[in-house]
Length: 495
Image 1 (spheres, one colour):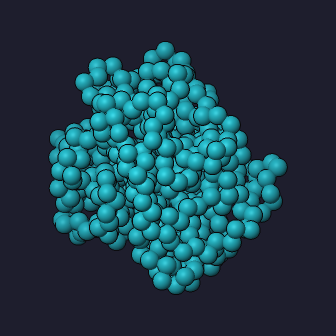
Image 2 (tube, helix red, strand yellow; image 1 turned 60 degrees about the vertical axis):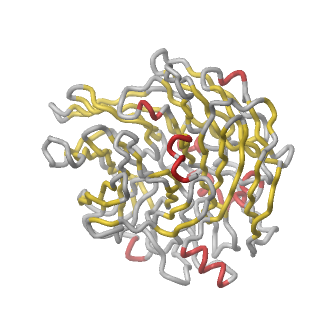
Image 3 (cartoon, rainbow, N blue to C red; image 1 turned 45 degrees about the horizontal axis):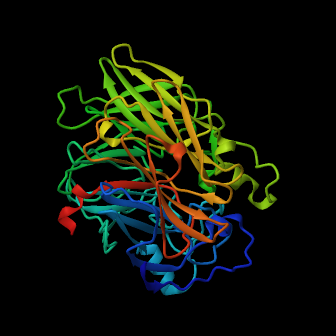
């Protein structure tokens, strides 16, 4: 391995702070690295060609009040595979909030769990007092990696290989970048190159969606009116529709005037909006469909089948869990809301009948799983396989993966091992492969036993065989969530 320490960021975090999400696999890192010719245990496939990007919540300064693991500053990790070799880069995302706090030498914004907020400056996004840390999601569009924040904000642009930074996206077209920001989980339609996105706020009409061309021009932006402020987190799309949601878990309106953003379940159904995509020859009116009350953080795929639109995602069986039993009292509620085994999400299917205006829904699996990926060559088409993350009991950590075969109903769970925690594992199709599962799963893992981090590569057709390659990183990295895979063919112009 040829590793170079590029930068070290000054931190004010108190190492004695007992917060569970400032230690263990969530211990933040403050170094930025360039590393080439990474050491490999096993053998990297010669046809694994592309970049795996993962975003992370990585706090730098001692929190103002109670820390929440979603508050941390964005740090992007990139590992480039080509010709049986791998290289690695990591960089903090230079958001406006990150730069302001670096200049001040301390935290200026409090986080999600601090109510009322103690922020010393105006914030961003739907809540209005939070720092836009751009630490939630990452996609690659028009040759740039775009990082985003879960409660809406800027989209920060980086080169997907070198992580050179280009600041916030500034779109040409209908009014430019939206004043309401953009939520995490914008989607890239690989058939058109378009970026599909949504946002939400506390001002009517409370939600919008839009489309950005493959060249980076905003050519469609429309309201999706809601009855009041809501907390959507993800979207899906088909050939003709963008699918947005209105779940009954949202802020208590009576507490908002007091500056308290407290979510509760309301006695309302779940609702899904089918918003016609521009350029399609269908009625432009939004179609709403009702379903059983729940909350869903993430969807997998959606497609059209005759008069039906079908959506797969993760339905929570307990969107508002009780405080986590056995957790330290100051953190018991926070830890329940970030524990998959408290929320109990399961792989689920919704069917929207366009002719009758009705919804049918059904479970696809009974296990507790989330953060699913699939072969994106099957986007907008029926898929057979989903690859989900398995959660550690009591903590927001991924301790394994599960391959779901939706045709047979069989599952193939694999655990990383005690004290080893991974990341969302996108599917990397094998060039020339014919089968839907002919490809690889890629995940960063942190091994607390050996105090190191690696990137593990699995053959998706046989997860039980274990990783076919383990690539050593130059430093131990903290746990993180959302990731994406971009094939080498989409990176050529940036080299």
